[in-house]
Image 1: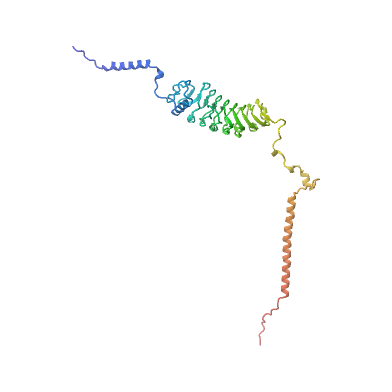
Image 2: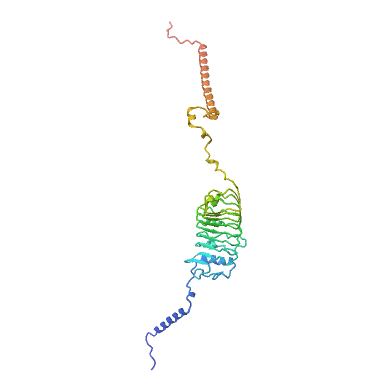
Amino acid sequence: MGTRRRRGGGMPGAASLLLLASCCFSVWPQSQILVAATTDATDLTALNTLFTSLNSPGQLKGWQVNGGDPCGESWQGITCSGSSVTAIKLPSLGLSGNLGYNMNTMSSLVEIDMSQNSLGGGQAIQYNLPTAKLERLNLAGNQFGGNLPYSIFSMNNLKYLNLNHNQLQGKMTDVFSNLGSLTTVDLSFNSLTGDLPEGLSSLSSVKTLYLQNNQLTGSINVLADLPLSDLNVANNRFTGWIPSQLKKINSLQTDGNSWTSGPAPPPPPFTAPPSNRRKSPAKKDSGSSSSDGKSGISGGAVAGIIISLLVVGAIVAFFVIRKKRKSKREEHFEQHQPFTSFPSNEVKT
C-alpha cells in the first residue's frame, strides 16, 4: 500500500523556515544588521566634504568620502545626539588641508576642536563656520593665516575661542560686539596689528583674555571695564597708561610694551564745575560788585538794556513830535478858514 499523506503536512515546513532564520541571525554579526542610516543627511554631507578637505587622511577611522553613517558607525572624533552631530574632536592627529566649505549647515554642532594639527597652510579660516549652537571653537596650534572670520560675529552662544599659535595677521577684525556669553579668548602668538577693536568692550562675561606676542598698538583702555581675572597683553607695542581697574586683576602680565611712566592723566574735563560757580549768593543778593570790577550782570545784558531804552525813547519822542505837529496844523487850519454864512430863515417881504 502506498503511504498516506498526513493532513497538515505544511506545518513542519514552516517550522523548518523559522529554524533556518534563527540560525542565520545567530551566525550573522549583529553589527552588520543595519536597517537604515541614523545620521542626519545634511550632517553626513558636511562630514564627507570635511574629509575631502582634509585630504582624506587614513588616520580618521571610519570616515568616508561618500556616504556612511557617522553616528551609527561611530566615526572617529564624532559625537552625536540622536541623528545630529554635536561635536567634532580631532586634536593632535597630524591633519592637513582646511575646513569644509559647508560646515555652516551643521546646525546642531556645539564644539569644534581640531587643535594642534597642520591645518590652513597659510590660508584663512573658512568664513562659513557653524553659528547656530556653537559654544567652543578651538583651532589653536595650526597654520591658519588671514584674520578672524566674520562668522564668529554670529556665534551668540560661543563661550570659548582659541586661535593661538597660528599665522593670523593684519588689524584684528571686530567680531566681538555680539558675544556676550564668551568667557575665554586666546589670540596669542599670532601677527595681529593695529589698535584693539571697540567691540572688545562688549564682552560682558569674559574672564580670560590672552593677546600676548602679537604686534598690537595703541592703548588698552577698551579693556578697562571688563570682568577679567586673567589678562596677558605682554610683548606687543601698546602705549599709554595701564588703566587702574586692570591693575586689580589677580593674574596680569603687561611686560614687553612701551607704557608711559609716571602718574596717569586726570579725569576728563567734563567733571569740572562751571566757571561762574565762584560767585557767592551773598554777594549777588547784596548787589555789591566784586573787587576785580566784575558785576553780576554780564556785558551783553547791559548792552541789551541800553538798546531797549533807546528804542523806547525813540518811540516816545516820535509820538510826542507827531502830536505837536498835528496840533499846529489844526490851529493853522482854524485861523485861515473863510467865513461861511448860513441861510437865513427870515421871510422876505
